[in-house]
Length: 104
Image (cartoon, rainbow, N blue to C red; front, top):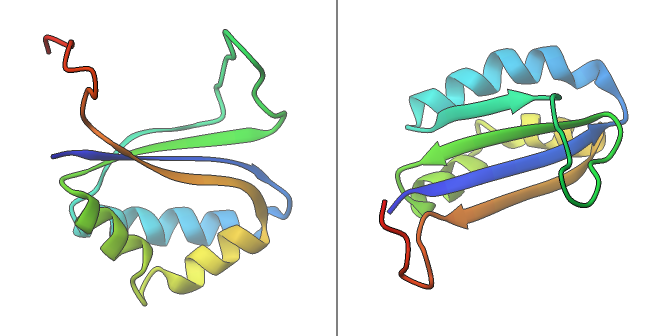
């Protein structure tokens, strides 16, 4: 079952961004993740988006794959840099309909 990773954050120190983007993109793709969106073009149609927010949407084949990437030694220094240089959330969302009503 697919799992989606939603990361929404506000950069507080941009020094980590270039290295993170260059290196982590390759790591994600090598471990089976797929970028669906990576953008600051966020429009709130309900509630509000934090100023300066960035959103990343990733698709993984399974929760195990997503967690293995997140907890990997290879990703660890980049995760630490992201956490130190931003404020935000890193969420995993299971690709299912708990109500069982969706037709596609």
